[in-house]
Image (tube, rainbow, N blue to C red; front, side, top):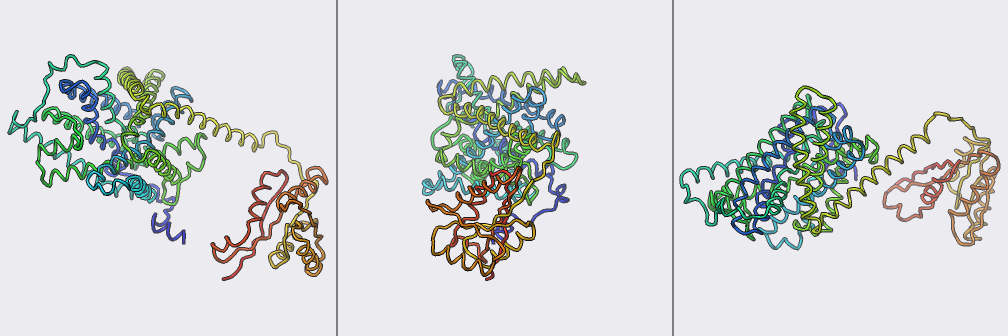
Length: 606
């Protein structure tokens, strides 16, 4: 039943040979990896305006200069990741660059920051999309957490079906968003061209009035608007997901994403400035611009619908990036190796499920409140930006390849700028919740190191170097029983087939039942000695464990096999009707040295 449900939800398993067919083209790759970055167009300009609003309407004159500066920063960051894509085709992005060039601590810091940001991206984008839905349908507001969890589960299932299928699923909303916003920019240009100053809304500030705006406030607005850059690194993390030649296709897709993002962000920022749009409660900046350009007609509602949809689907970028980054970390032994395993549908299923679970937990804790989640946002991504570009600077300086001076200049400026943005974000949002992320990063790094130490310890313990094979000096098979039946007799026959020293062990909890067992034992298994153990405290597991230790003490390196007769009910739910003594024994004896625990199942029919 569970297998059938899995096949219904996820589809049939894909053969390993189909891996190349599941790779992404540039068109589907843009839909899979760019939704987070592109969705930021819906709120990045508004974040700038909200920060500047603290200084009054005159400060809005800084909007376009700040937007232009962010656009230049986007070009620098995208150029850096273009170089990263070609330099590190195995993926890993900021983690790989920092690890190889700045050392393990820097690499793990980048990885921890990115993983936190991926989880936050899912939570923030889903919460924002649900907020748009509940704004339109207020009756759904009390159910916002459940709606957010449902949306996360739907996107998670779509990604579990495979990268190609998720790309097809999300391609239409992504390209609809791009088309509707290009239409918005074109419409705005037409309105401005035909109507000139008459098209401008009241409140457009002058540049001279902005001269007295504090520098710190300008920097804070710049830092807030830099939310437009979140998600830019996703393609560098997922280079192996593209069709061959992977680096070339990933780099071209990155250029497409950066170009589209630059045009849409600067276009929206220009229209917001030119139309004199100011942030106001109950209506987004995008809604105001679309209303000014189109009025309340079907095109306006198309822009709004595509905006809400892309905000919901922005989480998909994290579902593409997080599992791939986790797989790279797992291959380097910093995360459980299960995260490096590819599932039935040729995706990193474990990473996808873990990301979905963490995002649902975060949404539940913060009650799907976007304003509570946003202060935690963007710190991780700008920390990873800074480390990635600093790592590329180190790589240029070490390799001295052709064009290294230009590379050092681009990446050096980028590292300095993103580092400044990181400082401003951390400083201005520390008390609002950013301290949580700042505290979490070293905790996650410690976890990475602990996991790696465990794997190295296991490797040293299993190594054959200096190993001396010590054969057991004795072997006994113990068969725990509570009664004698067909399953027990079968297990006894198997025990006698593998060893000449076989003992059955029972724990006496009911003297009458024990006497009946002795009588039946003499009839059905007279050639196997039955050892009766007392249990004054009515424990079954502990007396068997103590007797096991006595048996192992009969000789040096004495080996004991504990053979468990188990009957298997015909229906899964029938397991609930029986005690789980065998399971408890397995759990306890797993940690007992020189002990082998095995089962002999006896299957019951329907």
